[in-house]
Length: 382
Image 1 (cartoon, rainbow, N blue to C red):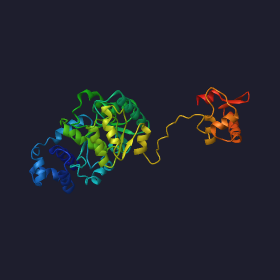
Image 2 (image 1 turned 60 degrees about the vertical axis):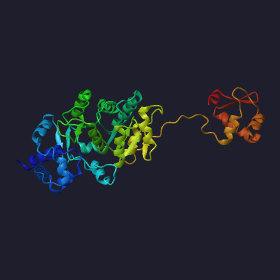
Image 3 (image 1 turned 180 degrees about the horizontal axis):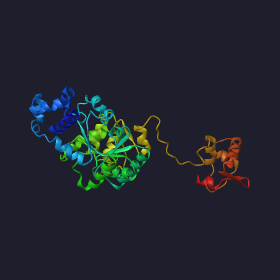
Image 4 (image 1 turned 45 degrees about the horizontal axis):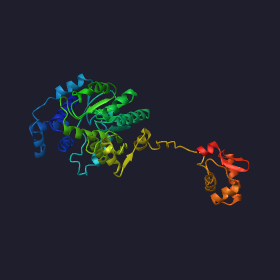
């Protein structure tokens, strides 16, 4: 057996031997390499805490079979040995380990992936779009608009392939010929939810399906929560479109915050339970309110990629001086007044009033009729 094959088999074995993430196993691999680490785990020659965590699985070695399943699907095992390993994306875990609220603040040991896109390249310009499974029509529409705008700006879309907001994000990215990554909470060969089998197949053909779990592993609640840290880590910003007060999307936002990533939230109706989690996030310092794709890119894009100022409605009165405002507002809507009457109503000397009346007439807001002044149709509508 050549050295490369031996290392790959060792990585695959270690991927299954313990429930990820496991800092103790990662430390062992860093100390002696994957091959020696795998041998020591098999023999039980490890520290007590790691022996306890690996005891149930250390005699189960199906690495060759796992790699065969992956190969049949055209996939690859991405390890820290590979150029595709997203080093910069996972650097945040090292900086964030002092956060005691995250007991296992550690990157994955390996990644099982299917799809043509390079994960390192994708993660350099990507945004996570997450939200509730029970999304509203409003949430789905906002997701569609945001993702279409992100794809237009060459931003990859990362999500968890769940029903609701996640699915809408993936579908829109595919429909717009964009790049999308689905981070799974189970094995690469276990489509979940089953209703998204076709969607997952499409993502695997044109984007990337990625998971830290070996083939055959079924999704479970704790694995979804563990998965969320990878969704956040692979993205420059995590955008919560709709979420309840207690939700996986809020958990992903928490991971993004602890990893030093931007956290964005979309506001919704204050009466909507589906947006309650977003509103709670927006009350916290550091969360960015976003309503357009350009605002997301402004947060996570390159320096200088600023969102355009929204077009604000204007009226013919916007450019008036303070004195002109007084003179203009001294005229009733449907009646005419003399300059003297206007001066009294405005509290402005007649000499100044005459000068301002002339300017307002030039602007088309007033007109003179039989020695009296009145609003024009344009002026009245303003």
